[in-house]
Length: 261
Image (tube, rainbow, N blue to C red; front, side):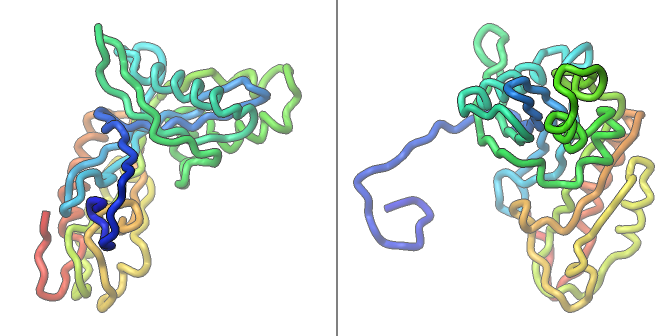
């Protein structure tokens, strides 16, 4: 019987897939007639919470070249994403490629493909990438299709691998409670919004009304909202992020309920 299946059928064939250990990354790649440019590299912070093993807490912009990528992980992830697109014959457009990277033999980086999505990153990433990287995937893909091939500026000015000039992240608001909302802790939300690194914040409207139901967050579909963080000071950025992780445990009160990790 298949593990976790609600049905009672048995099967005589099983597809087994390697468990990929490491850190998950996402690469936003723009292609122009086979030439590829990684326009943003994101590192996922997934943590065990609410009984689920891998819950999004943040999606961080990280560099893929230069002194800020001393171990070469960013470069290795981007180059592996390029190879995946080559293998699939993708020559034009915007792709969002997810890769897990971990230590390999002799100090190398071991990369494993999660998926290739021939679409944009499913988030409002433009303000953050403009501030952190200096450009964004949507502008670059437009230039790739409509700009003059081989001309000066535009596409030719975009480097193959991204660097960063500030710290930026999309933070996922994780609910630690489940049930009917009896109170919204506006003081907690106000403290979050007032942190120096917070440049934008959105709690989904259905969770801003007493009497509505809220679920514990176990995947991206059960997030309670999001926050954009941006700061040139790395220490302040990290402190604000960890404070948000602490505060989000107290965003809502629910009927007869306590949080359960």
